[in-house]
Every structure is written in structure tokens, then in C-alpha cells.
Length: 480
Image 1: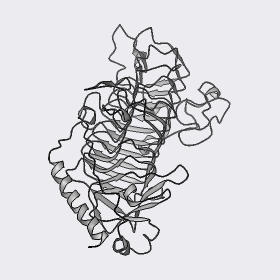
Image 2 (image 1 turned 45 degrees about the vertical axis):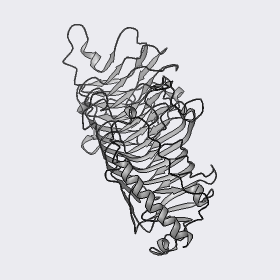
Image 3 (image 1 turned 90 degrees about the vertical axis):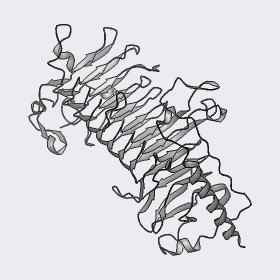
Image 4 (image 1 turned 120 degrees about the vertical axis):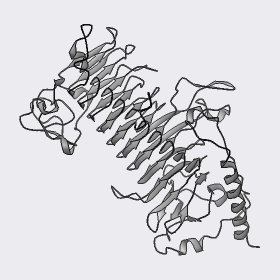
């Protein structure tokens, strides 16, 4: 019997074992579930399987691959396969893949291991499975479906999780992947703390995560769920366990539509976070209270959120509960089902939240609502807020103008100036809101209305035009 035949028989047994195991798992919210750590052991003595038949199906496009994943694979283990930094793992478009796990995929910063499609678009369907793709004990790797601006060479459907990047995975990039019709999260990137000391903050940090140019839609829960939601810890059998931090997180150029819960939710991203150039539409379709926001910056998260378009959801356009050093600028928020922005403090050692040059249109409630009493000073300057839905709802205890920027109490300290508050979007004189063109017409009152913001180093607007472009800064996300 050949080694290749032996390997195939072992995988066949593993597939059966996983199928039986999956029957006993019922999937609900990730944060409330016990942690199941499935350890699948494949003998280190096995040699690299013969994949010449797999690669031969699509000659030409798959010849650059170090290893082509067979159609019936369940686990791809880099240690067993002897993969080195710079190796290329290929998913062949001629095959139909089910649920896949990638273990011990370990490259280097200079030579990451790449997981990619070959021969055309690859389909991964994981009906009634816990995940479609999972990584474990892996670092310095990239999952990519192509290089084109709107090319999605890997398409993932089904499973409670589309991509589940956990098991102490770190230093990774995911791009040009389409994920749809999943029971819960499209992309989940975090390792929740357990009683295993390897999972807690003192012993593990997730570094340098880049999630970009993906298309995530039709999800039961979040589109992106990155980092743990409970920075101050989770109660486990062994006591309160602190989740790991993330340092160096970038989420950009993604399209996120029709998510049951938040479109993008980030927590514990303590340093170097940037969330930008994302398009979010139809978020919170299940309208679950506290889980229906467009973009959520959770506790323990710092950094910048800019140049995002957020449209038409059931909850807040943004909910900001970061560490208080957060810069929120050049965002366009349209048709929020609650407030355009809701800001509250959780873990907040920062100097204050900053909302600069955002455009907020037709929120069902207030434009910006600040509950952030604990930071030294909030900043709200150069924003456009049009037609807040709560304008006519306040009685004598509140001014109608509070519907534009609402402060929870006199304890909220805020530097607020040069914001353009108008009753209708037409008063701003946008070029064409019907086509999402929120540039300013030459006679817009927002032109030269803004305050000098040179100290914040905001040099471009939502449309990548230079800011400023006149004798003064303009208000809103677009510079005329």
C-alpha cells in the first residue's frame, strides 16, 4: 500500500468522524457558547501526499502551487505537509470543497504562506457545518481570491461562520473573498479566552491583521466580528479571563450588505486600528436590540474610522465605545434607524472622542448622541447633520437643537463648533444624493464653513480630494 493511499484512508476516517461530531453541536452566539477545541491528529510520519492528479485537472494555472488541496480534504496541516515560508496552497476551481480547516500554516513576515484559488473561481460550501473555513495555530499567512478591485476568486457559503480565524492565529491577511448565506458571522477573527492560559491576554496578542477588498453579505449575525466584545474579561469556570488584544488591525475596501446584526464589529483592538473605505448597506436586518448597528467600535479599541459609507439600517449608523483616542472623520452616514452616531465610554484612558467632517443625513433619532462623560474633552467640529428625526419630539426639558448633537448631561465636555445643521438634505446642496454623490455644488453653504483642522492631519476628504481647497475648510465629508 502506498503512502498516498494510506493518507487518503486516514482522511476518509477523519471526514466521517467530523460528520458524526457535527451532529452534536448546536450553534448560537459565539460569546455564549462553551469552547469546543477539536484536535485532529495526523501522524507526523506521513510524507507529503501526491497531488499530481489534482493539479492536472487545471494545468497551467495551478502549476505554481506548492500543494493543491484535494476535493475531499477536511484538514490541511502545514506541519504534516512540511510547508515552508513562501509556500502556496491552492484550492482548485475544478473541485467542490466542503468545510476546511488549516492548521499550523506558519510563514514569516517576509514570506507568508499563501492560500489562494487556481484555475478560476473556487466555491466552498459548508451547509450545516460550524464553519466553512477555519484556521488554527497559524501565523504569517494570506487567504486571497485574486488581485482585481472587484474580483472574488474564493466564494464561501454556509456554515455558522464563513471564515473563522481563531485557535491563536495571528499576522494574517484576507482579501478578495466573497462570503454569503452564513448562519452567524461572515468573518470572525479572535481567540476567545478559556481556562487554557495560552488564550489569555498575558500570553497571546493578535498582531497585524488586514481584512480588505472582501464582499460579505446575507449573514445571520455580524458581517465582520473582529476581537472579543468584553475587554474587561469573561467569566469562565476558572474565573474572569481577559481576552487577547489586537495590535495593527486594518479593515478597508470591503462591501458589507444585508447583515442580520452589525456589519462590522471590532473589540480589544487596542493599538494601530484603522477602519476605512468600507461600504455598508442594509445592516441589522433582524433588528435585534443592541446588535443592529452599522459599525461598532467596542471597548478596548483605539484608532481611526474614516471614509466609510454607511446606509440604511435599523440601528445606529455607528456606535463608538472605544478607548477615547478615537478619530471619526470623513464618514457618510445615511438613513440610520436610530442615531447617526452614538458614543459612550467603556474602557477610556484616551483624551477624548473626535468627530470631524462627517456627513449625517436623515437619522431616525439624533445626529450625534454623546454619553461620553469620563474623557477630558470630546471634539465635534465641521460636521453636516441634516434632518434628525427627533427634532420635533423634544419638549420643554430639551431644545430641539439637541436633536443635532445630544449630550446626555452637563458632565459631557465637548469642543463643538462650525457644524452645519440643516432641516433637509436639499439645504446642503449635494450634487446627487440619489446616486450616493455627496459632493458639494458650487453654491453649497458647507463650502468654507469649517474650522481649521490642520492639527488633526486630515489632508483628504471622502472622495480622496485634497483638503482644504479654498480659503477655509468645508463642512462635511466632501471638500468642494
